[in-house]
Length: 170
Image (cartoon, rainbow, N blue to C red):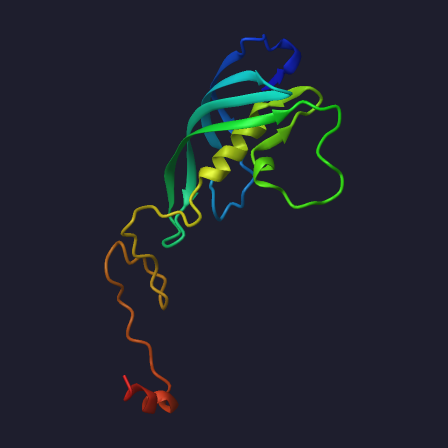
């Protein structure tokens, strides 16, 4: 959804976004489908820009990094973002971002793209190492059996006879 900046009244604008499906654009080995998200936003004028604040909630189908099984992750959070209203976009030359620039975005042709805004915030809320549950045992490194389902039936790995002398040190 696009919000035209010229349509925002001086007191601000409240927007309730119905549940929509967003493609997160992340690899299939991490996420097994699009995210289903709903959000409530408030867009208000602040100085030379706009302050966008709100909250979102939605479900994402992730893949467990230990057992490789898909599971449902509930993503929800509150956010606040400052949008700079400027004739030009971000600076063309590369420079190191300051702390004040981390929460600043630029408008696209005088409009706010809520899909991109929600996508960025959902990606930031995803876990770095997604786990289906805290006590997930993962897969057996020898036979690939799911250790959360029970002990595997593979035999103990053979030790190279040249390394038997090192075993005595343990």
